[in-house]
Amino acid sequence: MQVSHILSSFITILVLHCLLLSTFVSCSSHGEITASTNHKNMKGNAHKLSSQMISYVAVHGLLLWGSMGFLLPVGILTVRMANKEEAGRRVKVLFYLHAILQILAVLLATVGAVMSIKNFENSFSNHHQRLGLALYAAIWMQTFIGFFRPPRGTKRRNTWYLTHWIIGTVTSMMGIINIYTGLKAYHKKTSRNTGIWTILFTAEIIFIAFFYLFQDKWEYIQKQGLILGNDNNNPQQQPAPASDQDQEINVSTQRDNQKACTAKRNALRNLFD
Image (cartoon, rainbow, N blue to C red):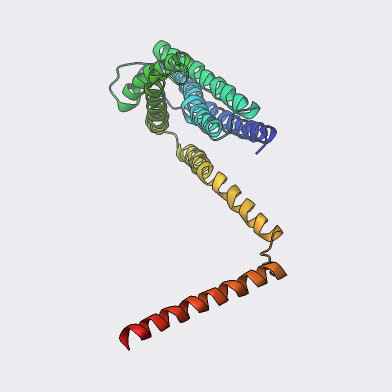
C-alpha cells in the first residue's frame, strides 16, 4: 500500500464525512419549529429563541461527530497502520497524520465543550451530559500523555504505551456511544426524526470497524499471494539424474551391505549349529 493511496483514501473519506455532516446541519436548520405559550406577545420571541438553540445543538452535534465519531477512530487506524510498517518514510507519514488527526479532534471537542457550557443548560441530569464531561477530561488527558512520550527502550515506555492505548481506545468507544445518546437527546428536545442520521453514523462505524479488522488480515493475504506466486513461477522440478560416480558409489554401498548381511547370517548359523 503506497503513501499516496493511503492519503487519497483518507481525503475521500473525510470529504464524504463532511458532506454528510453539512447535510445534517442544513436539514436541522430548515426544520419546522413549534413553540407554545400562553402569552400572545411572547410567542415570536420564544420561537426565535427555540430556533437559535436548535442551531446551537446542531453545530454542537456536528463538532462532536467530527471529533469523537470520525477523527479519533481514523487516528487510531493510522497509528495502527504505522505499527505494522517497517521503519521508513511511510511510518513517519502515518505517525504525523495520527498526531494531526488527534489534535484536530481535541480542538473540535474543545469548541463543542465551550458551546455547551456557554449556551446549554448544564444540569448534568442525563447520561449524555455526564458522559460528555468525562470525555472532555479524558481527551485532554490523552493529549498530554501523547506529548510526554518516553524514549524507546526504557521501562516507562511499556507503562506509557499501555496507558495511552487503554485511554485512547476507551475514549473512542465511549465517544461513539455518546454520539448515539446525543442523537437521542436531539430527538427528545426537538421532536425531529434522527433515524437517518443514526443509520448513517452506524454505517460509518461499521466501515471503520471493518477496516480495523481488515488490517490484521491484509498482511496475511499479501503473504499468501506471494507464496502462491512463487509456487506458480517455480513449479516443482524433477530431481536431477544421478551421475556415473554417484551410481558407482550406490552400487558399492549396496555390495557392502549385502556382504555385512551375509556375514551376520553365517555367524548366526555357526552359533546355532
